[in-house]
Image 1 (cartoon, rainbow, N blue to C red):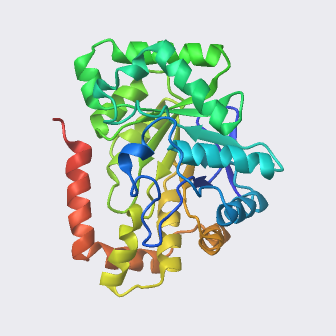
Image 2 (cartoon, helix red, strand yellow):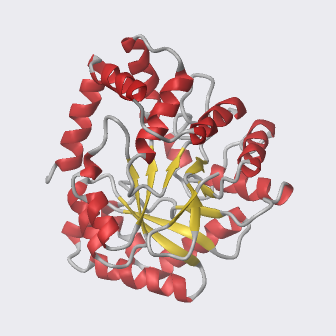
Amino acid sequence: MIYKQLGKSEIELSIISMGGHEYLADGRSRGFNENFELATRPGYVFEGFGQDRRKQVLQIAFDHGINFFDVTQDSEKEALGRNLKETPPPYEIFIQTRPEGMVYTYDPYNARMARYEDLKTEVQRGLKLLRRECLDFLNFAFMKSALDHDPEYLDKIRRNIELLKKEGLIRFACADTFSGEETYLHQIRAGCFDAVYISFNFGDDGATRKVFQEAARRGLGVITREAFLKGELYKMGDEAGIPDRGILSKVALKWNLSHPEVTTVLAGTNNPEHLLRNLETLESLQWTQADQEILDRIKKTNRFKEVDDRKTKEFFARA
């Protein structure tokens, strides 16, 4: 494994990290695509998470030095907490999660995340699921509407982060949004975050314009997700005449890691063979002419053009 310092912090993260999603037979993520309302409801845990297949994936992650794990819904938190007790990692690991029901568009104006007692209670509830006393990374994913609705919103978030750290409930705070560049820049410039958590891939690369540079200038780490475009990459590959998913995955990971601002890229899978394949990327991170030729073929597909156009409009929208 290769490790990289997270911004100006004292810790190093494995450059390939693990997401917590588990998957249905058709490739869609469990929970969210079974019943979205239940998946985002605090306290609801689907059956069947964290079983043998997931344990195999975790063991491979430990065997290869992965030390950063992200979980979202409560089913993933509970499973990871249980699995880590069953198979303790042989070294220090770092876990990121979010306050359930408070992020993105789940709560109007993300108001509850700005109320300290509400946020503290939710963090404590998440820690019980994870069976930990302190959360390494708390993901503050709020939308532009929160800033527009409350001019003091970022000040409240800054205070909440300071209090959570002071009480020993979290170590680091991550800036996240689906409102695009403008909101990310507001978050970064607030001076209270340790890292940026952001979607970043061939068809969603708007962060290279300003966000990455601003994060680096202010000493924030960068954690990227959706390297495989939520599976769209493989459909683009089929259209381009590149059906080998292993090749596509490696090119996607290498492209992500070729950007010096990126600290770690999440490569979520519930398939042991897929994780081993992804880890083969570490054998050579140099971006080659063959990699570029694959990317060029992907970019010529109609599916890529549609995704790229949509994601560009979303990331740079000001409304």
